[in-house]
Image (cartoon, rainbow, N blue to C red; front, side, top):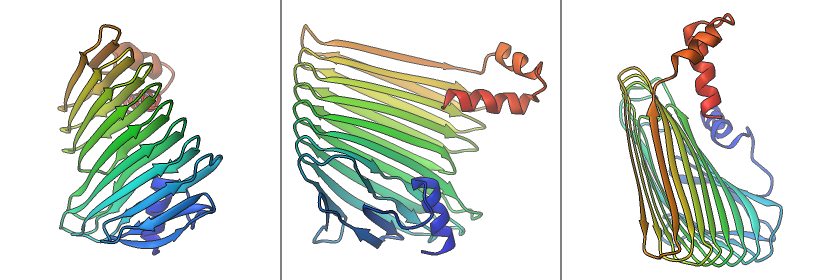
Length: 305
């Protein structure tokens, strides 16, 4: 990896060198290195379109890193990764994509991840998207996540996109069986003329299945955001979807949460709030010696924490 790719790696995955344990690093559309362990196997797809990850049943206290790095202007990269999480396993997956675009052409990554989580297995999935570069070409990221959670399985998604991505469409689809749980924590900030659209479609098909989707976002300058969320309750289940947004300058934010109950014992809740930073908060911080810009930054950092 060159210095730019190492910088991107630090931004999206939190380290500067090759990690220990299982990993697959994709750089400019090709594998830049991979490693397996006794419990986590990584198998390239025969057609070269991505990888298949197999986590053995009962695996505990292991992690998998699968960052994607793009530093070539004009590159459009699409990858299909499938994850098979064995019964009773408990694993942390660190993903994400970093784009450096120093040219005038669009650089784009579309990542389609499909999860098959077996009975009683737990997955914590951490995803960070980041863009940089002095070029005029767009930095585009379009992730899609498809999730199948079997009985008493659990998945938590922590998704962050704070800087440098010009356009993103993020799709998440989930199907939960009896006792399965899905937790989503999303944080987004857009600025300039950036656009960000996120959509969730969660189907609760089993008794005691539950979903909690929480999105927090900040839209600045002339950026545009759209949040779409649909939760379907087809059994004795619980579902909650929430979107809280701060709107600033000449930005636009749209929020469309939907809940659909197809069972009399389904308990579903949706919430959405969009507003500017409260003047009282700014005044309080400015009386402590902060400038308006510093006060806004502190409020935003706390909101997205």
